[in-house]
Length: 220
Length: 220
Image (cartoon, each protein chain N blue to C red):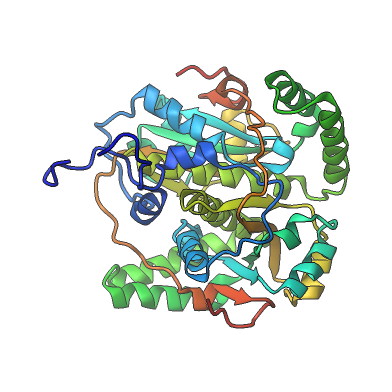
């Protein structure tokens, strides 16, 4: 390989993790091609989830008039209309009621699972879900795994992202028809950066890691 | 490059996303080297978070006796003692009280932010956090972004992972000294797989994506 040529291969996971920034401003003149958006959404769906119930739902907002409506729900943040795509990331509270059987049937059909194993999985999922007191929290956990996957896949394909949680969830619900049994977990703007944001830094592992017991200092 | 030689470069993000599995069983004879674990934790801390407050905390359990205690809190799942490392992933509810000023000082010191911008960021964070009604949910959102980053970084470096939410959070709190203002978001076992798990499949984008309005079919 000629060392003066740029490496055509996408970044590794660690490179994408290091390069990703919460993009402060997007180039409104640069659209996000549909096949690329589709590829990012497909990557997001490969995240793990509780009992493989995949509670994430992605409400994709691209039309300018709808992005204006969404911006009005999101503290008037300019990036909502600058970015060509904003995904309203939702967490569905009750996929076990509607999607457990289709999910198990899919596994049996693909050969990933026998009928006997599917019956065991059904029992385990039912027992695990019965104990869940806070369905919004439950759905949010898996959904944010998918959100992170979406943003890292984006970064790896040269697409800038900005996660946002400064919005009025009730207004988003009303404007976009989101039912009460779906939590509005975050918005993710996708597109191309208009300006770079410097790395804001992170606390060291001595601040955020503990060894063996809460509060006991981390040592590798 | 000799095409018969394996590619020494780590996988791309999309490759890691596709290859990752919730590992059903770990090889208990294969430890996870500390520098590698440290690298995974460092990658996790690069996830985005609300106001860069980084509410994630990683309680790393490696000692066999402690993994046995943790297994007793986690429905006696064998992987908790098979895997050489289990991370108790915590979400801290009030980093704005204790970590906002150190975070802003770090940004100013590194030159990522001027004093004026830091003052604006302080005001924005205070206003955003004042509106948060459910601190557990708030902390969990950012923390799960870090959890996904940890698992993808692991996969990219050949380390198998298994996210778990089948545990008694109160028992984990008691056994590992976790205070009430930290949510136990999930456990993540890390190590090397003892057996492969077939891909369980995912719903298509027609099932989990909507266009412009909730319920309106997705079309690329």
